[in-house]
Image (cartoon, rainbow over all chains, first blue to last red; front, side, top):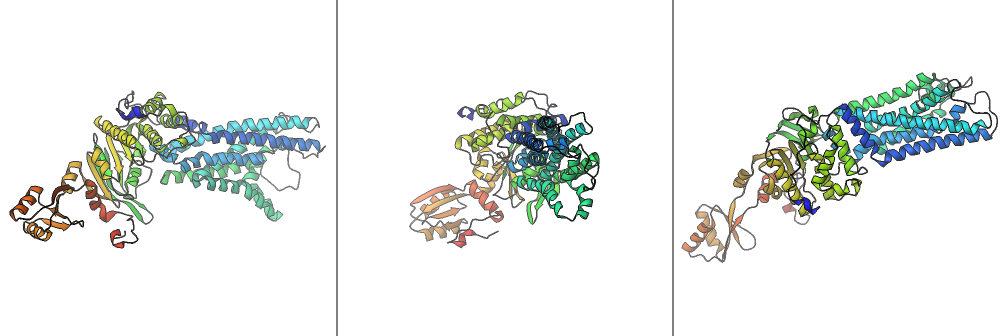
Length: 278
Length: 312
């Protein structure tokens, strides 16, 4: 680098008219896509999600098949998507990291020094993350479904994508993952700290879901339908629950409950993000 | 043109920036000088809209920075060279910044060449040395060919080659008519680069003048004398209206007379001199005296508490 000691300013000038070089939403989207594709954690998280959801679904499907016939309420679609229970946490980790890593590394300051339009910047980041999460989730969900059905078909327990509610459930699985990711993104932006954000995400999606089982059944009947992960789980079921189960909203209204949590987290986070010192 | 009016920032109980009013003119290097914790970084963060002022406002060419349509063409700043995601390559780091402002991709290669990082452009920046990190930060600041450049303590931790490089860069940028606003806690650094000085201490503006004015006002010439008859000379000097003090090493220091006058005075009165030498108070000394009352963290000297001064 010794050669750069002299004459550093030669070439500083940018060969563009002074009017060029404006911030736009399209530019912000390109910028955020470059960010998400240029760090390894994105690939590791998405690969981990795919492997775990598909692998766990295959294991569950194989297990179900090897234990023989099941009753009328057996849901082969849900069985093949069982890995979503863990997948939600992995996409959640990525959702938190996408924003919290900007804070932990200090990159957020560089980002805002080059694009001080905070609303535009955070919207672009949210859109890019959501699209990446949705595409990966769709691939993951469909792969898990078809692999699971293939493993169960020899025991005539499988279903087909054309059967009632099945396509909705498989797409719903991908939407469920994406919504969990967006919820986590909101928590990450709210808490601005990787460990804290991941903790809050696991608490809300997982711990609450477990603790709710310790409530008296009468309470559960009223509360379960409002629990984010339980509500979100309805959209990837293709077979109705047996009578006497804890009452839930229908698949889409339940999914709307999960989206409501995500919307609240994101809205609160964005309002604070625009006000707080970076 | 950066203009601050009554700019203040409070963090909890601490008033980090206290009612600053100043402007930074184009075509010059303006040094922003103050001891550690004086509020230099906070002021820069306020200029860039990273923090919101508690009171007052600061504008760039008449607009607050969060309303800039062309932020990177307007201002290039290096506040903290570590403010990058270490897992991202230098190239991708610069690319994502360029894209947000719709700057062409080739510009990334240009600035990488300019700062001499082209060979490590594809390496993840977490492996970079301090100097390389600083160069990456400067590359980011230069991406938009900005009219205003802001550097916060740019030479901290750099080797002599790096320091020289940054100095020359700043001079060249100012010579092209750009506004260069650079902070430092070292007067000696400013002496070599700045045209104009803003001095702050504890968030308050202490001085706002050209570097020549600062030198003229603050570098008092003194004369060091060694003599076997210090008491006699001191008396003569005092009678002549000058100041005198003991330096502690057996010599005395005279202020208010030049060396010729001191020599003549001694000769006329047959005082024997063993040494007569002019001493220029360094600007560093002047700066320390100027900000002495406003240093936030005095270093305590355990065995000689008297030297620690008044603890803030």
